[in-house]
Image (tube, rainbow, N blue to C red):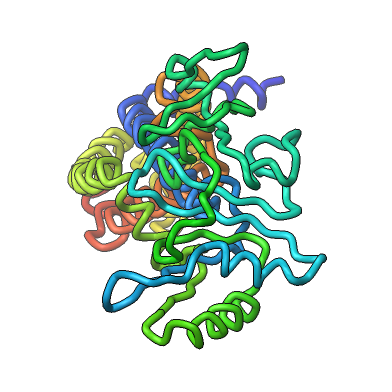
Length: 355
């Protein structure tokens, strides 16, 4: 019982002596958890391609030096569909970031699973985000979506995800296969070899036809660059905060260290060596860092749960928590270790108190 009371008194005494340092590391933990979670969430989002495309999807650019060709989209699709087992999806860019032209062959539309697999074949139809419901035209008990002066029957609606990176398009209209093959495409379900061999056959018809195939899944440097672009404001704030931390941590630690003069002197009188004092101070500093980190993490999580920051911090990420603890640990341990070892402050304090 006496031991327990002594331990409780030691904890209360440590809290009183370290209140400013504890508050300081709580603030660092809150900011670190939210900032690193935002960065981790953005980095995770970079692997999710837009419009339900898989990671093995391909990008295709078909072009000609003369910017024209007699080869149609239908020529490409007809050749691809010679195999009954073929199953694929084609999106074509149409000069807008908000919509895509789409063609399905034996494949479900990724954003609405209950549509027929051949929905967009030979029909002037559309699928739209719920945000565009006000743009629907009612005619003969049917719903139509007007795009580029043409009416498309609305066959489905979907609720798009709120994403900063690789956002989904707001509408999809059926691809007119009688258009020129030139343009930019996203293809899901076909291999590089199949597409390349098909286009090589079409080049025999038009020797001026050129094409480029590439993976839509970003490389690691691309993912890092996208994350930086998405969270540039957070990164700038983190740099500023880290500079302020590096300046203030030493001052706060010195104040905390100076407040322990009497304890250091008392321990010295009962036979504690400099090594004992070093280990004792480092251990208590580690308690402060760990306790402050736990409190800061809980506060950051509660702040995130309010959904006020959900657009900036979509998820409270475990990786963000780990990086925050590492940051607090490195800053704290490096600072206290430098202060109590490099300048011999233990000896100077002891001598001062003895005088």
